[in-house]
Image (tube, rainbow over all chains, first blue to last red; front, side, top):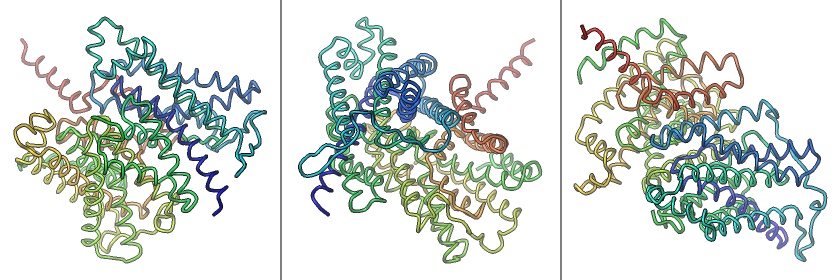
Amino acid sequence: MNLSLVLGQVLNGVVTGMLYALMGVGLSLILGILNLPNFAHGTLYALGAYLLFATATWAGSFWLALLVAPLGVALLGAVIELGGMRRLYAAGHDYQLLLTFGLALILEQVIILIWGPIGMSLLPPRGLGGAVDLGVTFYPRYRLFAMLAAGLLILATWLFLEKTRLGAIIRAGIEDKDMVAVLGVNVSRVFTLTFALGAWLAGVAGALMVPIRGLTPTMGADILGIAFVVVALGGLGNLPGAMLAGIIIGLAQSLVALVWPVASIVVIFAVMAVVLLLRPQGLFGTR
Amino acid sequence: MGFRVLLPLLAACLLFPLLLRNTIATEIWIFAILALAFNLLLGYTGLLSFGQATFSGIACYVAGLLLKHYGLSLPVVMVAGVLAGALSAGVVGAFCIQRVGLYFIMLTFAFNQMAYFIAYQWTDLTGGEDGLPGVPRPPGLEGGLAFYAFTAGCFLITVAFMKRITDSPFGLVLQAIRENEGRAAAVGYDVKRYKWLAFTIAGAVSGLGGVLYAMLFGIVPLAAVHWLRSGDIVFMTLIGGSGSLYGPIIGAAVYTVLAESVSRYWDRWPILLGLAFVVVVLFFRGGCVEAWERIATAGWRRRRSP
């Protein structure tokens, strides 16, 4: 095993870890403020990927698709919140779970109906093809772009939450939404917005992942557990926590893939178990 | 336990093979066992586990492997399967009960995915996507009707066992935890220990369901440990109604018959399943039992009023 191989895998781990984190951040906001188990989050990610594929092949522009696809997912997120989720805030987690799980089933089957059950792939856009010489190893240019884009988006989301008035309302809502409502904030509009934002982040993560992993109809269900792990380790509404958790499991996955490829997905859950054993409340969690 | 509880179920056990195909009738009682196990968690302890297929699935593989490669006798396989269910639930539960609410749900699901991916990747042992075919039924149970009778018997024993547990002081503590966890702890109960015990017992009963499932079709499919199965179990329990002993049983019967009749005609039938989830959640919360009670009380009132 040589150095360039190991370095390549470390970079792979950080790239996928950042995308996991991006997805986890969106989920974390939705769970934090809406307090419901969103089992449709994985499918929103898958939908972002398929919409990117459809737009990119139809319009011929990856960049346009990268802009449009996540917006489509955000729109769907808003519709889901307004049309169904809204009526369930007072219900138990069991019914909320069933609704989001039902939506996930429907969307996954719709994806199969439209694009077929077989996996597909898409090349990176022109200008991001090929590899960069990093001295020790050559690394695909697109992956570096995806890592950078995910990092910037997480930073932007963090700034939005920390520095803007709306962000402050969302953070306050995660702590105590009744109090926020009492203070005169239109909480239901904040709910819709948060759901759309979370869906948008999932859509971006899915779209960015396409040139790296390709598309399969089950990609959403497959990544849902990983997003849950990111949130369980990082803590609800905790962005640095989600980022650290994402990178840790991304690295674990790609480094284990070097020595024992078949165990590379299972190791994510093993990491989760170990962290929970040492710190039951998660990396930064307080609850 | 009174006859009033068991008698209708016994009647159903005798009636179903006359009305339904044998495998469907058998499947109903297997799913009813799984739903009853899950309802000890959801209905009585307030724990929403989205990972019950982990335990029934592992037991299913254990039973399948023991029957296929070692040809062990029925009691040994049953005990091994139940132990496998209890043991896996004991380990997973020890992690999951550390957290509450959404975290608990997510962790049970994450462990379910872990079990699924292990089964998917470890093809030498499990056959991966192709499943584990060629599981023989133990002598005496080869016939469809004999196996049905055996499954129905296991189901009735499970009902009696569950009733015994939920009526016991232990069961009352579980319900106290469901109603108010903080107060149960304040009175002096070790809430985490009780939750863990409930989780492990539910795992053992799910293990029983898993063993029966392995013998039903002679194959352990990968779907046995898939999280979709966990979702099915949640759905059955909720459409039946999680508030009663009968609810999950009725839900299992309704779900199995519907799923079987629809899936035969359309490959994409999970769309309908998803739509059913959404419709039930938005319009029929409370499940069949509550809907029936509402209709019944309405009729009763009408008769009483002059």
